[in-house]
Length: 335
Ligand code: AMP
Ligand code: ZN
Ligand code: ZN
Image (cartoon, rainbow, N blue to C red):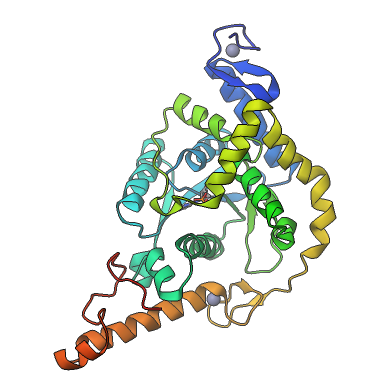
C-alpha cells in the first residue's frame, strides 16, 4: 500500500476516502479534516479561548493535540467522576499529556466537591450510572467554561460516536434528541456555553492512529460502567456495515447533517431559564444536576443520622444504617 501523496509506504488506510497515507501525510489529512470542521461549521477562531474537555482517552487527547499544534488557544479540563481506579488512571493520562506538552490542564473533582462520585449519585437517585455521569459531565463542562470565561467547550466525540448516537435516536425515533444532534450546539441562554465536536469528520480508528503516530499515551480501557451499553452495540452494528460498505457511517451522519436535520430541526423549541439554585440554563425551575445532588445529599444525611443513632435504633433503620455512605461501592440502593 502506497501513500497517495508521496508514494512512500502507507501506514494508515482510509477506505471511506479510497485513500492511504504515510504517517506524515496522515497527520496532514487529519489536520485538514479538523480545520474543515472548525471553519466549515463556524466552531471557533484563533482568538477564542477553547476549553477542551479531556477524558484521558484517545479521542479527546488527539483533539487537544491537534488544536495545540494548529495554534488554537486551549486549556484542558479533566473531571474526576469518582469511578474508582478507572478515574484515577484516566486522570494520570490526562496529567501526563499536559505535563509533557507544557499545556494548561484544569481539574474538577466531583467526590471532593460533592462528597460522592457519580455512581453514588446514581444509586441515591435511581438513575442509571451513565445517565448520572453524563449529566454531571455536561453540568461541569458548562460551569467551568462559564466561571472561567471560555468562549466554547470542545469534546472529543468522533464520527463513530455521532453515527452510533444517531442510529440509536432513529431506532427509537427520539425526535427531540435528533433535533439537538449537531457538531455545534450554539449558546441559546447566557448561562449556556457553546459546545462543539471538531472530530465529527474523524473515524474512531483514525483518532487511534493519530494518537499512536503522535506518541500520545492514552487510557485504552473503556469505563467499567459502559459494559453492555447500547451505544457500544450500535457501534458494533455500524462497524459490520462499514466493513462491507466503507463510507456507511459517514453517509449516515453527514447525510443527516446535510438533509435529515432540517426535517426535525423545528421540534427543538425548549424555553430556557436560570436554575433557582445555581443559575445554569434549564427548562425547569431547578436544574437536573441540582435536583440530583440535592437528593443524593439528602440520602447521605439520612444515612449519617441513622449511623449516629444508638445501636438498637440503628438496627431498626435497616441493613445499611451502619455503612459509611460516601461514594462507597458497597452502599447499595435502598430504593
Ligand atoms: P463519553 O461520553 O465518555 O463518550 O465522552 C465524550 C467526550 O466527553 C470525550 O471525548 C471527552 O471530550 C469528554 N469527557 C468524557 N469524560 C470526561 C472526563 N472525565 N473529563 C473531561 N472530559 C470528559
Ligand atoms: Zn506520504
Ligand atoms: Zn442548578
